[in-house]
Image (cartoon, rainbow, N blue to C red):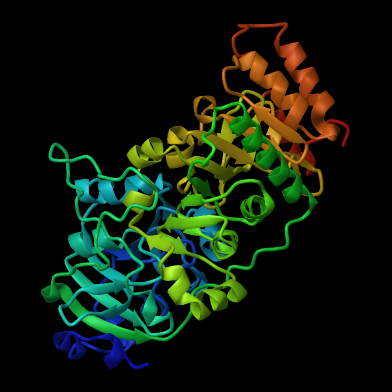
Length: 506
């Protein structure tokens, strides 16, 4: 399928050009809004042309960097190539690329870690500065000049509205039959003119299938024909399956106790192998007619839809393995009726998360004995990926799980520690912590009660006595509401940085 088949708005055909020609229209130092959310819907050609331009400018001794805002992470041919070419000055709000991560932690890229529900509104408020150019992947353009969204919506609606100029990448690889899958809501406004969002069920449609753009803003149209990042998910290991089992059993118990309705509440699941293991557990679990209300639709939710265990899934992007993507393409008519893709200001909206009663499941790097969660920083200073949407769901969800294996680095790191080296989610936002060792239900517990439950249920046996000793000694000194020994609270992290092992006997 050619670009002429996808671009049915004649005026835009006169603006078709190469990626290199379009990259020449992006000046040094500007803020650029790019499409992309968790390896889906990101521009495929422009970032590489930008990287080539940066290298050429640098070779002549000229500066060339841009500031890039997206929905979430992109891929190696976007974040990776620009970071490698030293073309990124600032990056927000999320990143998973290892080359970009290295540059962030080396101080070369100024990374702004943000709640994903905040990004669009902060851009609208003017908190982030002025956006000069938006680079947005779309599947096509209607005869009326409306844009057919791609595999991710993310912040594209906002970028198209606030940017001075727009460059469209028309990707002819994803199936054209995705048209109609999207639900773009245009009812948001800036305070004090905000109105309630009229959504009471996770599968309500409240918008329209297309993105709008002022045709006068569009300065370039670039054709691409390339799939999204192949998101490879490992077969769930024993630890992931045990974590999933604890969660499934807990949900069944909550339903039996009358704290969950029999029809179940909508499910949000973070990205990764543990998340997919939980979804796999739901596939064989006792729950029927499930609804998904999440950020990223992964392989596991596709399986649930195909099996009839989940009736509808709402997300802001589709991020699949190659095998799952082929199934999506081959059965696009089936999935188009069951998947709704929305802007992330809707998929992550705290008001909707609370109203719909979302059951949230997200990963973490470490938890401390009082329930504070670190989901972003390794040893307190090294950025991993970012907070993403976990905070949007953790604070506002009906039930909120944080999950991790109890140890990392072959047991040299305990993921349950006396005090977190960095806090993204305070103890007030944490309801349930799960490791392969067990599940700690922290609802209605005081700090000291939480500490004992976390040590007993979630800590690895190699570290349980060490944690218990710290907690017992902390209770013998100082204030007793949240007992700590400050000179030792971060000593585990210090020990690891010095010896490569958190264990006291290492």
